[in-house]
Image 1 (cartoon, one colour):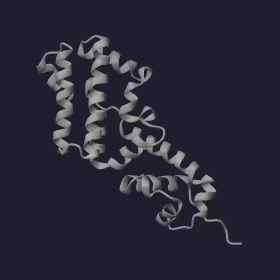
Image 2 (image 1 turned 45 degrees about the horizontal axis):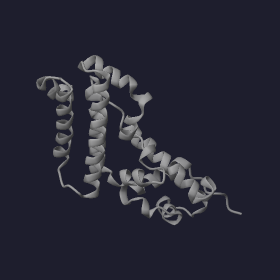
Image 3 (image 1 turned 90 degrees about the horizontal axis):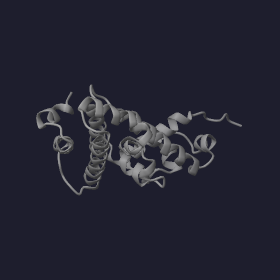
Image 4 (image 1 turned 90 degrees about the vertical axis):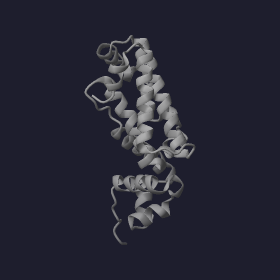
Length: 200
């Protein structure tokens, strides 16, 4: 009896994620995975048991990948918050199939990380408090600002990947920035200050 071909689970999951990003979730099946890996279907079955188990792990793997890309980055809380939205918009241009997969999976948007995680009250309490402190707005206004930008970003990304609107990457990021600036002005921040907050 020939020895079992050993392929690490991580490699199988990465191959599945690469396929999702490149061609979409619809192409994922055990034969296609095996072809991409250059092996029979047995190593996949040995690692996961069945395709349902693989799909569950693939969803979490893809979600972790997305979350790893969408970590806040910036010198102030407004810039850090904006960086998450900017990354999400960039993913709409670079990896639209990944976003389609994560938003249409049976787990749905409620479980989506990245931009969806901004609705998590506990995780974002410190960011809201930092916005209040650094920008000089109330916690209520900070919460409204965050919710508005998240909803707008989700809508913008959805329109881009569905082909509802045709805009360049630069135009989309400028649209997102304009919404952030306008809402900061609405919250009482002078335009001159609001217009540079996301670039610091």
